[in-house]
Image (cartoon, rainbow, N blue to C red; front, side, top):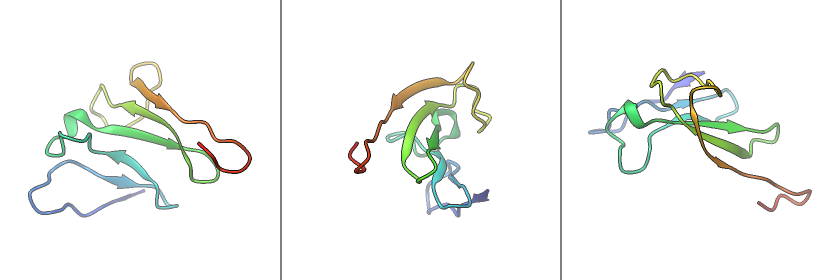
Length: 80
């Protein structure tokens, strides 16, 4: 995983996985803090399938402690 460079005035972490998908993202409206970070999960085709709130603020997905915010489903023709 590669930590992305920060934009000026933004202090929250952004991490992308090798495929380029954002794994750790700032929560809209709270871009200046890691405390409200979002953990993104992708399927084998690079489509976003789950978003969790990083409740432990450790940057690691723990499905027992982190809160599931949304789940996305896709059909065979890539419709969400």
